[in-house]
Amino acid sequence: MGLKSDKLCLECETPLIGRVDKKFCNDMCRNSYNNLLNKDANEYVRKVNVILRKNRRILSSLMNGSEKGKATKEQLLLNGFNFYYYTNIYETKQAKKYYFNYELGYLELEEEQYALVKKQDYVK
Image 1 (cartoon, one colour):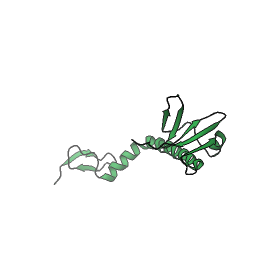
Image 2 (tube, rainbow, N blue to C red):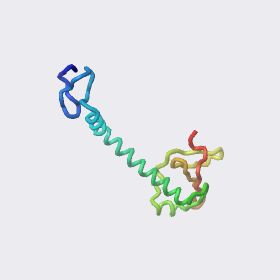
Image 3 (cartoon, helix red, strand yellow):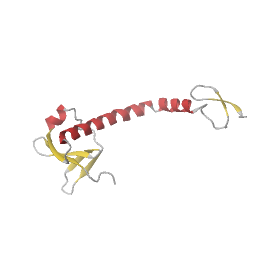
Image 4 (cartoon, rainbow, N blue to C red):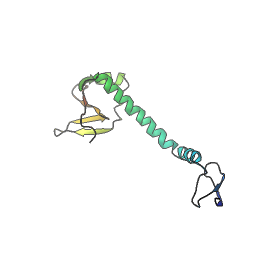
């Protein structure tokens, strides 16, 4: 027999029975409460992830299964590429910057041309 307290479930306000430090009556209430609490942060992360995945799909499609490729800025933009979002930057000893969306990346060349690359040792 559990101990009844004056505390209520933070989600549904049902009186809690059991441990003194119990905050929710069941897992469904706990999940519902936390989902609502984290809703704004989760929506932002979801939107950024959608952009990153789209950028990766665009790079992959332009590379057509190869390890390297080339594209123009216009090609990237017409496909909906967003240059403001990337997962990481790799800078070479020559100070060239590769911008990566996961394992696929690009390097700006001259005259709005881009070299597209697939990083082989991405996860270490």
